[in-house]
Image (cartoon, rainbow, N blue to C red; front, side, top):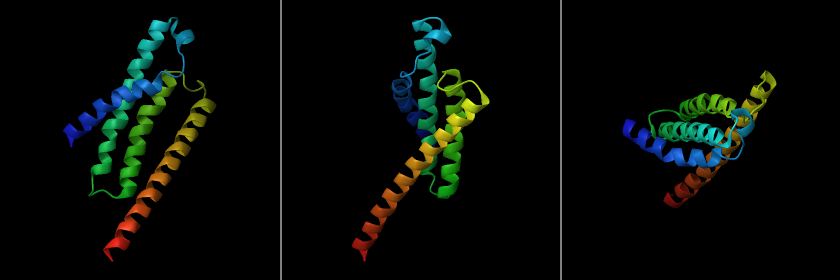
Length: 130
């Protein structure tokens, strides 16, 4: 499991970097080079966290609720500080809460879509077996 988490984490690095280069830190960092360097590192960490965290979905002895909760916690603990440091949110209590609520809504939406998709696929497979 550790090896799989490491592999998925490493594969998540380039994805995190690619997704993280959208906002600009130039003004906060003082130069484009510093902004790109910080954002590259933070985005890589974010991709690694989500990639490594995805291992929880392969733990069949855990309930779906536990898998979801642990994955959400891992994602939140990575996303929120990185988003704050990368200036992807307003640096205020309102900005932090707003960002968290947006993150929660997106997480819940994606989770619900995937759950319903897999539920339908399993239902079709069960019908074929009957």
